[in-house]
Amino acid sequence: MEGSVHPLTEKALNGDARSIARLISIAENRGVGPTSQGKTEGEIAALMKELYPHTGKAWVIGVTGSPGAGKSTLTDKLIEYFRATGSKVGVLAVDPSSPYTGGAILADRLRMQRHTDDSGVFMRSLATRGSLGGLSRGTREATSILDACGFDVVLIETVGVGQSEIDVMRVADTVCVVLVPGLGDDIQAMKAGIMEIADIFVINKSDKPGADRVVNEVRAVLDFLKGREWMPPIARTVAETGEGVPELGENLRAHREYAQKGEAGKTRERDRLSSKIEDILLERLSASVFRLWESRRSEILQDVLDRKLDPYSAAEMLLP
Amino acid sequence: MSEKKIRVVIAKPGLDGHDRGAKVIARALRDAGMEIIYTGLRQTPEQIVTTAIQEDADAIGISILSGAHQFYFKRVIDLLKEKNASDILVFGGGVIPEGDVPSLLEMGAGAIFGPGTPTSTTIEWLEKAVAVKG
Image (cartoon, rainbow over all chains, first blue to last red):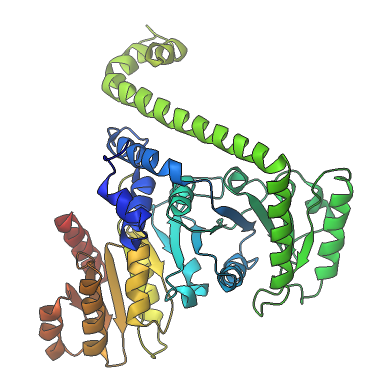
């Protein structure tokens, strides 16, 4: 491995913003479809292999919640909070792509733009490009890239989510689920899904009527978790003014400490790496199978149309 | 399936607060399948260039109605040079007198689209210019 470091990874590891940005783009653009011919997949794999030894140091914090919950504003305040302690902060903000045109307006930066002049902050907007789990396909790699390049804290702001977009839990060390008053009755809080992935609940816009009710509903949910090693605390914030952000910071640190001290953090990292390997396997397998399918499509399809072959046998012919 | 997306920073430098034009062009480019990073009002040239670099943008679109276009275009283009990022295209629109366009192009702006330009003209230009630079 020595001596053969790619110039792009070398520059990125030395903190060159352009190279870091380029690496993230390569990760985003890697193809799984039949058209990519595996070109960018191989490229990003080679680069990520070089970066891996430098990863594992960053604290990855996920911020998730419904659209309009104040995730961007809260993220902006968390950048400020961590910068005040001298940490270098990377931010990945995910916004949706249009299902019709594939285009996107990425506007999370709008609320964080005051940090653009700070060289200790690197912000990147990612479009979902068809991913449905609340993140984009390149988010995991982008997180590793920022981690390797020396960012102490990586904040991931998911796309505005509903009830089951929980990919962030497979990337983050600490997950904040941001709730706001006025979105539904207490039965909503009992449902499975996003409520279960919180390490910390944030009740934002807590100066608005109904905030106490949300707190009580979350408390009722937590009642069912009694006996768990880590009980998610409830932080009340008004992100707009910064109220409650220092307390949220304390909660975040407490979770970090808990995760690092006991087995919890290690278990989480094992699960995360395991799911990462599974992702790569799936991606590679589907890419190679699809390439094969592409090359034999018309011939096989004709046989299936003529009822000489059934779809199941056709698929089996293509599997390794 | 996953083609390379054209990424464009749409920026409004300086103090004028009229961003309807910027929003119209942002939406049109989005509908053409591009990814638009919208930075909001009152950006400094430094912020615009840093944003374009971090976002690995192919182009920066500057919307300006204040009359300070000579200054802002020059500053953005100079900063891009300084940061070794001259491959990022710069184009603009807003209220820019026709007489000022040649000097902006000479400075390094790729294109200036005056009032009334159909958004399809901008889209075509961008697609072509990004393809050329590769």
